[in-house]
Amino acid sequence: MVYCVLRRHGILKASLFERVEAALATVRPTLAGHGGDAELVEVTGERAVVRFLGACDGCPASALTFYAGVKKAITEQVPEIREVKQAKGLGGGGDAVHFTSPFAVHEKEGWTRASRLADLPDGATRIIELDGHSLLLSRFGDTVTCFENACAHLGMPMDHGDMVDGIITCPHHGFATHSKQVSA
Image (cartoon, rainbow, N blue to C red):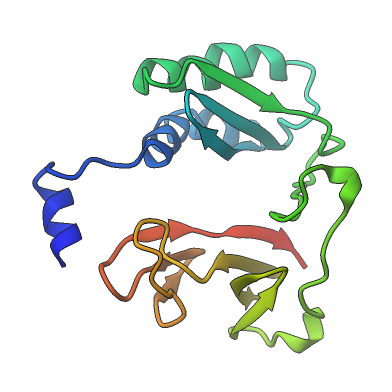
């Protein structure tokens, strides 16, 4: 509750990750108009790494889109970010959306099996332990979402949070976060 009040009154500012994500959100409608999207991979210090998804991944115009759209939006709206890098080599373009495991440093290291799809019924959420991480897996039709079972701000468990349209809300203080989605 205190966290929400401090955020509401501007005493506690949005995190660097949240501000970069908000800047990225300003270019998403343009990307979506061409069948693509962009994912914020990481923010460390003065650097942000962004990955194109969908039709933007591998598109011949992606360099222009990256520099004139994504990089410009982030550096203008979040001046602390001085370097914006594009994650490359993770997909083949076209209409497919490609994701890598959050635990794999490089694509060549591969995926870590978390669960069989048949073991996760439609509409269900399970807590699993994987490589030392507590995770929440949820299934909605052909979409599986994966959350770390810890609030991004306070580290409190999220397993009793409300989940709507791929967004989970912390049951302790109301912080909402997006999941990583993969096609089943």
